[in-house]
Length: 433
Ligand code: GAL
Image 1 (cartoon, rainbow, N blue to C red):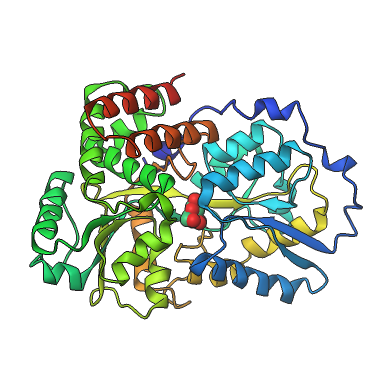
Image 2: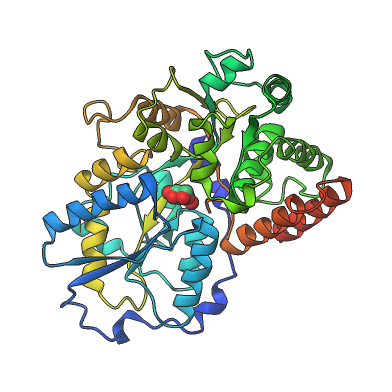
């Protein structure tokens, strides 16, 4: 069942980057540098601050240990996935690729495969003994014509609600659970926050990509897993009444959010919970690392639960890496791939970042992973899996970019009925065909 769901979310390949495939990317065979003499690896990610940067540092440590001759070059760019992916495209098109880059498993990775921007790394699965260590579903998402193109470093869950207990207390809301059975129930709680603590933002959110992230959790809640998956294989109509209803709920939720949302990435928006400035935040499970770094304790200072109306559903995403076609330093890229896929690398990185290892042969309790991470690993095994739009599992890069433009137009506009109608039309167009 789970396998079918993930694969349904991935669906047929994306065509956008096919253009680039015939264009500027150089083949690794004609790259400027001797592939065997690599002394560095430039790694492109958007992990540039907080727990994400610390996670990257953990991998860097393992790299230094295992490959002391290879210098780590941090090609990270700030601003989250959207702007990072744009910049990456510019570099790839200009023939200036990093040796390896962060890419989401699913349709996003498929884009790069179709565009011939990532190499077949099946040989590395054999060399590093990886063939049996990742969930087969995940490997299937990264495979085309029997070749595996990227190696996963972690698995994240996108549909998580985070709540600040002191703020709930002040508003007289229950402090033992943040589980809401529906968006409507959640809206009732947001109303209570608004009435009881007018200075507090009921629901904090960051800039456009965070708003798309919020939107996908509302779509999952309102449509349910099967109809949500149907959005990506044409069996659910983006222009239909169900989606219209979900978008209305999204519009309503946006009305409880901070006015300065467009000036911030996810971290300052989540930070509002720590500062007592917001009650709730819906964001992926890179948040606990931030909360834990401030010594906040789950159950005492903050609560987490599946985002409203999505209990039993796991909105999945995974980061992965490859050897870039035309990588200046193939040996460096391979060292990186060895490290990020190794037990040591996945333990060091994921413990700090908040995700769970993509490897299935790591005992999370024995390795000291947090309670949240252990519970996420259990949910990943038992919940219904759907793919994230914002984080590339279910949407191609172009679909993601179009969804971001549509949502931005709506949330920077009047957020009225006309805006909702345009949003729905633009989303339908983004996912058509
Ligand atoms: C996601 C990425 C996560 C995390 C998050 C916030 O797209 O997969 O690993 O970095 O963005 O930056």
